[in-house]
Every structure is written in C-alpha cells, then in structure tokens.
Image (spheres, rainbow, N blue to C red):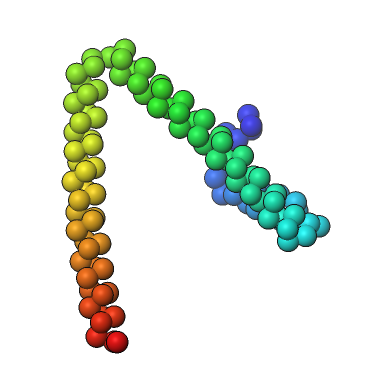
Length: 107
C-alpha cells in the first residue's frame, strides 16, 4: 500500500466502493454475505493489531520519558473522561425518564 500516500481519502473510498461492487456483482446473496463478513473480520484483525501496537508504543514512550508526567497525564485524562461519562449517563437517565413518562401517558 505504498501508493496510499498519493490517493486522497475520497479517492480511496471511491476505489473501495468500486471494488466492492465489482466483487459482489456475480455473487449470490449468501456469497456476498460470506465475503462481506470475511472482509469485516480481516479489517478488524488489522485494526486490533494496530491498536495494540499503538498501545505498546505509547507505554514504551512513557517508560522512556518522565514517568510521573505520563502518569499525571493519564490520570488527568481518565478523570476528565470519567466526569464526561457521568454527565452523559445523567443526561441519558433524564431522557429515559422523559420517554417513560410519555409512554405512561400514552397508555
């Protein structure tokens, strides 16, 4: 995939769409389903490998740098993420309550 640097994001999407159409053209629905699931699994494997490699590289760079800074940044980030999640949960609970009230009124 050395030429991927030359292909724009839009061109890459167009290319993958055309390949998908051409590959599925002469396949039955079941064969299309199998091929689609196979390609999804292939993509997931590649993304999982990449995510783990990034995770390892991140940990290595933290170990090579000032570890207290890495720990502080990770704690700060996780605390901020936790607070954001708490706010989202609160909002979702409000929406659920509203929907339950509307449902109760309609029954």
